[in-house]
Structures are given as C-alpha cells and as structure tokens.
Length: 563
RNA sequence: CGGGGCGUGGCGCAGCCCGGUAGCGCGCCUGCUUUGGGAGCAGGAUGUCGGAGGUUCAAAUCCUCUCGCCCCGACCA
Image (cartoon, rainbow, N blue to C red; front, side):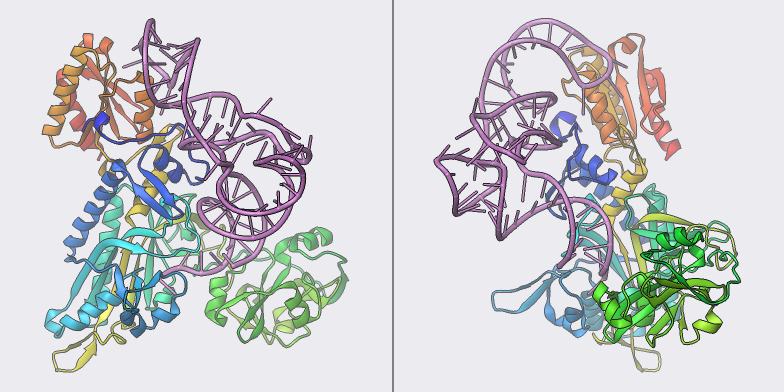
C-alpha cells in the first residue's frame, strides 16, 4: 500500500477532550474519529487493526468448534419480554417502534435471539453440544461513554453461546472458551490476567473475566502472586492486616467537630484501623448500617449481595434514622439492621457514639455487635493477605477485554429451549455465554504499547507489518531500491506500507513513530551509496544497517523471530 | 441520574472578570530557498464566537433558557 493513496490523517496535537492514552494516540495517529459521544468512525488504519483482531478471534473460535452466525441488530420486543429483560433493563437499551407501532429494540447482547434459535431448531440430545458465535455490532445507550473506543454506545462484540445437555457438557464448553480466550489475547500481544468475576444480573453459577492491566481501565482486580488467586475486587476475598492492639475499656470521648476518619484519628492520635466506620445506606426496606474498619472501604456490590439494592443515605436521612448528624453515628443504641465486616469480630474499636460531638472507645464485637450480621463487605486492598495462601495481594487497574459466564437455564427455560434426552424426557438446554470486545483489545494493545512518540503495535494486530521510508522520493536510486524491497516483502506475504510522500524526512519519521508499524526500513541516499539501508524496530528503536540486496530477507527473518 | 468543566477559523488555544475594530500557534493555498527527526522567508484564504431569547447606543464578553462534548461519581445484563 502507498501512503500517498491511503487516508491517514495524523494530528500534531491530541484532541482536547481525550484523556486515555489510547484515545489520544488512536485519534492522533489517524485510526479513528469521533462522530458523537460514544460513536466512532474507524478510518482505514483502524479497520485494518480491527480486522486483524477479528481474524484471530474467528480462528480460535472455529478451532473449538464455534460456528459463526449473524443475528439481527433490530429485535422484536417479544423475545426480550419472554425472558423478562425488556422490563429489567432500563435506559441502557435503545428502543423504538416500527411503522405499525410494534415495540422493537436494538440488541445490546444476543442471549435472547440465540436461545430463540436453539428453541426452534434443536430437538434432540444428538444435536448437542453446539457453540454458535457472532461478531457484530451491538448497541447500548451507555450512561457515560468514555475513554475513546473503550466504552462506546455502538461497538463490535464477539459473543458466543454454548448449548449443552448437562452441567458436565457446560463445564467442557466453558473450559474450551477459557483456553481459546487465552490464546486469542496472547496472539494479540496483550498482557492479561484471568480473574473470577461476579455473575451479576446475567445470572448463572460461574464467571471469569479477562483483564488487561492499564491505567485507563475501569475495574480493579486483586491478584495473589503467591498462589495465583485472582478476582475482581467486586468479589475478591482478603484478610486485612490485624489492627493495632488496644485494651481500652468502654468509655465515651468528646470529639467536638471531628467527623471524618481522618479528623478523628488525628484528634485522638490513633490509626484508622483502630476505628470502626459506620455507613448508613437506604434500601427499599429502610435504612441499614454497614460497618467496616476505619482503614477499609465498603464495597457496595458486596453489600448489595447481602441486602439488595441500596444507596448511600443523605444527610437528613441519617439524622432522621439515628437522631444525630453524619460523623457521629455508630453501631450502638438503636435497632437498625447492621451488617459488619468479619474483621470486626476481633479487636477493640473507637466508633461514633450516636451523640453529637462524641465517639466511644472500647467497642468490641462480643459486647457491642451482638445483633449485627457478619458478611464480607470490605474492598480488598493492596497488602491485604490472600485468603488462600496468606501472601500479600496486589491490586491492578484493568480493562475488561472479555468475560465468560455459565448461564445454566436462565434463558432456555423462559424461551423453552428444550431437548429430548436419551430417555425421551424433555429438558432445558444448559447454556453458557462468552463475550469479547475487539475494540477493547486494540485499545488495550495501545495502552500497553506506546511511548512518547506514539503507538507500538504488536506485529499480530498492527495495521501493517512493515513501513518502507524512501527518504527522498525524487532520488531515482532510492525509489528503485524502495520498489524492489516493497515487491520482495509483499512476495514473502508481508503487509507493507510505503511512505511515498514527497515530505521532509522529519515529517515521515514522526508519522512513522506515531502510527506505530513494528518494523521500518529507511532508504537514505547516503546509506544507499554504500549499498545499505536501515532496518529499525519500533519497539526498541534498534537499527541494523544491512545490504540492500539482503534487506528483505533480513527484515523477514526479524519479523518472524520476534513474533 | 448527581457533581464539575469546556464550546471562539480544520486542530490546539488566548480574549470574557472590567461590553466598543476577533487574535495567536499549528495546519491549508502560492512563490522562493531548504531537504535524515513535525523547515525558513514572503504573500494569501478561512469565523453565524454552539444555538435561542434578553439587557444595552453597542454583546465573544453581562443575564435567562437550551443543545453538545469531556471529567469525577452512580450505572454498566
């Protein structure tokens, strides 16, 4: 491909509204353009990357017996009503009516339609198992599109669905996907980890997420380097460090105007782990008091699993529920439901006194939390101990690049996706669902592969394998060498871009670094007179001067070696 | 949905507080010079100042409403 024939609008400056590195670079290097919030145009270079990623995904899906199908993006309301999600899902789903007034929606995922298909066309255990997948556009009216291509309202997703006759079959399908996904991310050159995840509203019994470490991520995972335990902090278990010992007898202490953990610790000259933090939340059944240690953070999703949907209480709600202003509330002297983190079972704490301007010390679970329910509600923190091996945990910020769920019969039952078993009994098909966001793979690759000059693509998903830069396109020997190299490398099956623009060398080099093609051959007049060209690796910046005649062979060897 | 910020030429920004001729850098066009890390000089084009209404002799600037975009949080099936 000739650079001059390709639309690659690079920018010297990053758009002012970009925050994430991948967002800035993908815009600057001419891969994408934003049309509106959460809606992106993929430019020629961007498409090449996406297609590379998609090809890897298809190959690995096909390798585990996946069969590609396409599903309508426009869906009738009925299937979604049958599973109940028409009502469960809120504004996140785009809805519309067709000309005759029928309710329709734009599919945000395809459990319903895939299961519909299975319900209609799978009848016997002889037809199982099946793995069907699609690689298509999905639409979600995201509350907050962000970080460039990472969270958009319209995006491509590979989702596959497994259909098995029993749990054992599901285990197998699940495992096949787990392994296929690992291969996909490895082949795409992404650093990632596999973590246990919350099954959330998808239902089901087991779920894992595939996470690529990056500052632009939206999730946190706890990882134990000791035993390999890895989980989303939404459910990660951890053993907090023991708190500082104290044998204070129970007593009231005046803490005028000291409300926050920080104010109280400074005032009393204690550490946060000697405090008991009380957080009032409001549920449909009234207020609930959540208790964690002062150095811990309440995890709302963990709490939600115990008490259902809730939100933090407003200041006036705190006053009406407990009769004191925020900052002095505590676990004692009232009949509110209390959920306490297990770490509080031991130790002696300082807590709010439920009396304005006062705290109490000497609080122990045995004496003061007898009516509390205990449940893990703290957020796993770095340096907490692993529950399995005791080694310290590490917390990584990550981009979710894929997930796998065991769905069970959540969709097959309402949609009547049944089969007849060997005995002629009708049974619901056991399902799994498995998703990958190709754009997130691309963005994660940029997040993980860049320097001050631009993107550094992994060879496997780079828009081109190699860039040829004839420094002076008006010099005949230069161009002859460039054309010969170009032909030779294409002949070997490599994807080559040739910067044939009549631009100054500096401009071409800057663009080359920005766009991030992994290998570059520079043909300059001076070197050429000595019969040499430069082969440069984008990642390391390492330059090899080689003979013109051997350049194609040399570069080819390098690319294969390093892949 | 709650909190915050920003909309001025293609891009990045200044001007707004304190109303009075719309400006800078980059890019773009022409010419000459230059030619291995985003060239120099000279000349040139490009603006309903997001939109609507109001105040005023006069509004990019002040007021009201509205739309869009970004960030933090909530949400993320």
